[in-house]
Image (cartoon, rainbow, N blue to C red):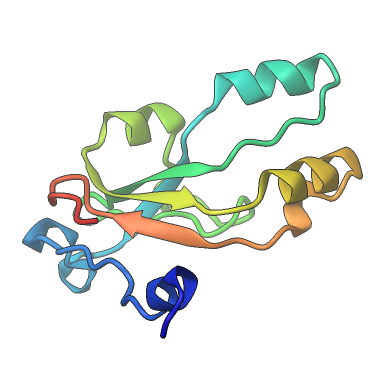
Amino acid sequence: MQTHNQAYAMQPPAVQAMTPNSDLSRMPGVAIRQVAQWGEAILQAVGIPWESKNKYKIVMLPPGQHPRRNFQQADGYWKVTGEELVQMPTIMQANEESDACERICLTAGGCGNLRALKLHFMDPLAPQMD
């Protein structure tokens, strides 16, 4: 006889349908922007080591644009601004999955960027399936 936990462990993961909007193979490239979380910024400004789960907006590169891969690249590459990214339509979203204790402890210890990163990518136009 299986217990409830054993039966649950055998369930396949949820599947999300992808729309043609999210077909990355047809795109010239993407730009990713972390969504600002003002509560986190305010708490850190007053010295409280709070770190929220990060969220990201993913947009398609405009045709003919080649973004800089680092700050030292020569002119002629697209230097995208935050304002431009905000105005571009979202093709996908990504949400971080992490443990609150791990985020806060590593941030308090000064090594918040060393935590494990697991992202869930979602198409904002696709119906969410559970």
